[in-house]
Each structure stands twice: as structure tokens, then as C-alpha cells.
Length: 236
Image (cartoon, rainbow, N blue to C red; front, side, top):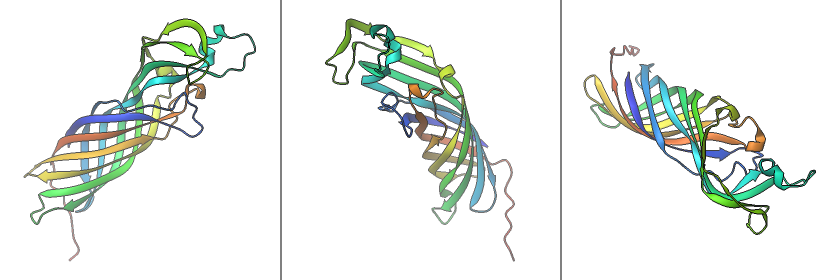
């Protein structure tokens, strides 16, 4: 068993059929840490599970697409305008509790077996614990991306922070994997790894708000303490 922690660099990728509302997210950063258990299956393979706190989300800066329904008061009844545009910054920051289940393969890097290169991969299930959406900046709102046709002369202030969990699916599942290097002392192992995850569930409940999937690159260091010496048998 052990602990690992480090930096998550997530963004929100656009799903198939996504509109401009959900495109253009860039990477943010946040913590990622986990309680890990590793159970030997053979000399080379083990089963790894964890209870992980993971940062997900993304940020958009510049001209952004907004559903026109949010500014319906500026259009006559029956108007068929779907989207409007404004220039500001918006950030989505999500915190998930994740349960990965990974198959790990170890490769010795030296004759004494202390240095190992390993890869692991598998699936995860996740539950969104917190979900915050924030915006900052002010801009006129336009009918076009080129910002030449404002819907009014009013400058709108977009500064806001709010809980957006009711707009999003709380549950998620997807794929997870890492590659790392480990040094084994007697019963203590230290390791460093890089990897990532990708969620299969569409984040938004309403596709008018976009179609995005969570995902992140992760860099961590950690340690494992050997509680029981594995009994690995080989044929005579």
C-alpha cells in the first residue's frame, strides 16, 4: 500500500456533434493524489487499485459562443438566431473521486531487480464531488464571431462564480494508464510516473450547453510499503 500525489493538467475535449459552445477549452492545473494498493499476481504482473482525488476541467479565453436564449430579450419573437458571441474568460473546475482498476506490468532495469520500469492501464469509475464555473471580463454581445454586429450598445459584465453540478452528469467512467520508474528498498519502494485518463460520459446534461468529455495528463511521485512478501511459485 502507499500514497501518490502530484499535478493534474486537464482540459475538456469536444465530443462528436459538439457545437462551438463546447469547443476551445484549454488546459488548467490542479492537484491529484491517491491511496494505492498493489497486489502481486506473478513476478511481472500485479493488480493495482486506488482511491483518487482528481482535478478536471478547462478554460476558454477570447471570443466565446453563447446560446442566444440567454439574451432572448434583445431579439424579436420568433427569431431563429441560435448563438451570440462575446469576449471574456470562462473556467470550469471539477473535482472527482475516482476508483481506477489497473493491470500493471514490471520490467527490471538492472541485475539486482531494484530499479523497475512499469506500465499500467485499465478503467476507472468516477463521481463528481464539486463543480464550479466562473467567468471574468466584460464585452458587448455580438451576432457574429467577427464582433462587427452588436445586439445592443450595452457592455455586459460576465464576472461570476457558481456551482454548476446540476447542469452536469455526476457519474463518469473511462480509461486510465501510466508509465513510471520505481526503486525498491527492502520493504519500501519510491516511484515517479506520468499518465492520464479520459472519461467516456458526455459531461453536460443538456447538449445546448455543449458536449465535452473530461480528461487530463497527470504527473505524480509516491511510495509503496510492502506489507506481505509475495509468494510467487515457479514450476520445477
